[in-house]
Amino acid sequence: MKNNKQDLFLANKLYYGDNLEILRKKIKDNSIDLCYIDPPFNSKRTYNQIYLNKGEEDKAQTQVFIDTWEWNDRANEGFEQIMENYNGIFTAQSIDLIQGLSKVLGKESLLAYLVSMTLRIVEIQRILKPTGSFYLHCDPTASHYLKLILDAIFCPRGGDFQNEIIWCYAGGGIPKKDFPRKHDTIFRYTKTEDYIFNVEYRPYGKWTKTFEPRHSLTSGGEKLDMKKGTPVNDWWDDFPKLTSYQKEWLGYPTQKPETLLERIIKASSNEGDIILDAYCGCGTSIFVAERLKRKWVGIDITYQSISIILRRLEDNFGKNILDNIHLDGIPKDIESARALANNEDDRLRKEFEKWAILTYTNNRAIINEKKGTDKGIDGIAFVLGGDWEEELKKNEYKKILFSVKSGEQIKSGDIRDLKGTMQREGAVMGIFLTLESPTKPMIAEAKSAGFYTYKLTGTRYPVIDIITIEKVLNGARLNIPTVEVLKKASIKTGIEQELNL
Image (cartoon, rainbow, N blue to C red; front, side, top):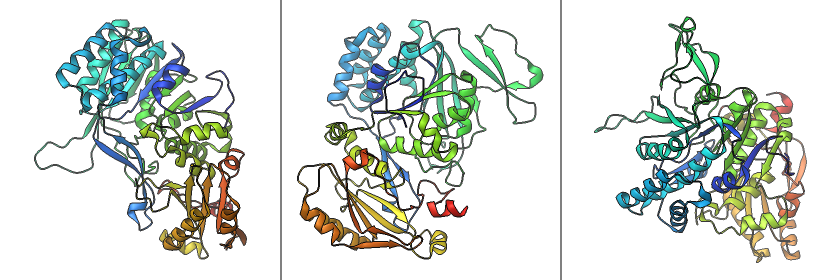
């Protein structure tokens, strides 16, 4: 993976950080062909990544993001930027709209959400090419407000609303006193009236799809070829919502079907075009863009999402694909690692731990997100013991525990604590990741724990290993084969891959 500075689109790019700052500072005007976002919906929920159930449900989930909002200093700063027309980028209509909504809604959670979305949508409009399109995926929670914001940003500058797409799906619970809520809304806007659009035809009586390129297709444009079938309309019921039984399921809470993104990307871009997802999550848009031979840019504020995307690309396209990805925002030296550890943004409380563990394990660990009650466990990886065939059948594996420290006051007692946690959890190994250099008593305490012999290879490993962040930055990685816990459909270890299981 490349970290050197280079032109934006010589390589596909993953940005780790706040998408507002990245959009403002790193994405040029008129540079993106298609932007799709599936942002928070203001659902007032906490979303967890689901891993393989190891019989301990509370340890098989990791918090991915919290979709709750409050009026705080960040929201107030964003509101003031809109009112003051920061960088001259806001339309008069968008300023008046947010000002009016503040009087109607008050400075509460909903307005905080709408301010956040306005700040980002105005930047997305800026970076789209004149022929570009924008798809915003949401649900009825705030869609009526979001459309007002989209109209106020796109329409005064020559863009237009094109479609309100309804994605219908089944599954889930059925309320007793309401109609079941079984659809999402996807708003489609274009920057100008001269935009890319490729018609998808549904052959009569079939679900098979074909695409016919159409450039500059407008409501008064060229006549469609009805011999190919009927064009797909603006309600989509042919993409079921993902479940844990489907092969592409990664356990990510808001994961969307690949076929849904395929329709959007094929409709509003061509091969070689540049796709941007500013809330890329588990990377479905990126994965589909790569498969469809588009260039892509992804942004996410959590390293867990970056980790999932890297694993997903590697698993599906091979390790060589990572050589052609430019990572931005990932710590590359002690100074940037320390900056991540000391970040005061409450949204990034666990990000240093996530980055350290996932980087050291090549994205093959579970992060423990339990706030204040992690019981000394910051992460877990799983390895096979002796009877590996039986263990694979039963999903019963041996644990490796991770403890991460970023403060200066590390001591031998931290190693004793890890040793005690390992005994309580029945773990075979413990990894102590530290930003600071260990003391001699710490090293002696770790060595006193002895060695663990991995039976499948006969290799010996320290029961407790102290790894500095400097070593991680220099390429140190966990070298014992671990069990894949990211998805149910494919459980593979290094040993299995060697045996072609």
